[in-house]
Image (tube, rainbow, N blue to C red; front, side, top):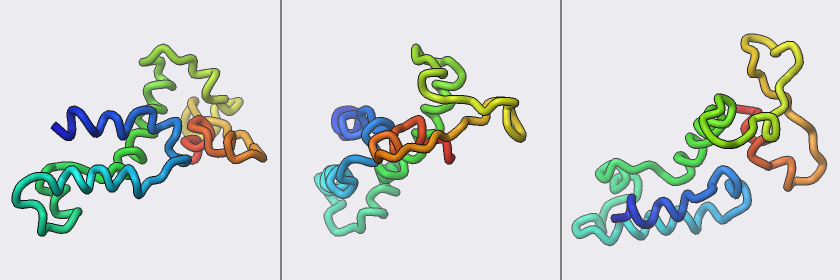
Length: 120
């Protein structure tokens, strides 16, 4: 039930709000949900995650960033790649989809999805 009803709410638009929320608070929701299962009360959090086949929410968010970038870059969604990423002229080294990282003064733009994933 947790995977179906709770986790989608915790991960909704995580690519957008990822650096601007309380990580401990959202992780505590998953931690608490795993303790509701009978027989899991005495186990460490990492052990309960292994038994349920779950990952930490922070790890899932880090993993979802390249997946979302790939989806946007390859036009597998209704978003325009040009509005998110500026490609380097000449393709850069190695491949033709090298993204140009813009420099911003304000944190709100500096940590935006399109600028944050360009380092990855």
